[in-house]
Length: 111
Image (cartoon, rainbow, N blue to C red):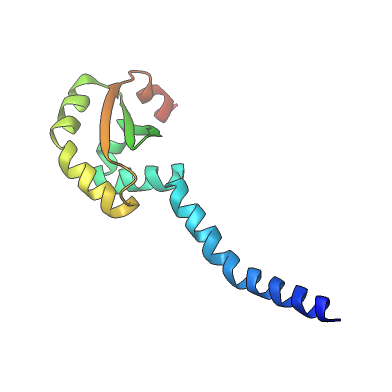
């Protein structure tokens, strides 16, 4: 009978620790696509968000697709501010940003 008691005690301990472990794994995986997109919109505003979209996050680099060179230039000028705001919103997983021109983005977002 001692084995059953020990087994149920172990199960109780695992049950107590599992939520913390799962939360830690979730945080280490980085922000979700929805979280990044929402934070980007909040950071740049609705108008600029219509012309830009996060398209990738790899090794700390957030890639933003932009529909026109004028938007690419303007957003690039504010890159430091955006990076700080995104780090506050999403944590330190984002260490740098890169903008890339993607002219079909405008059609994709309105069509």
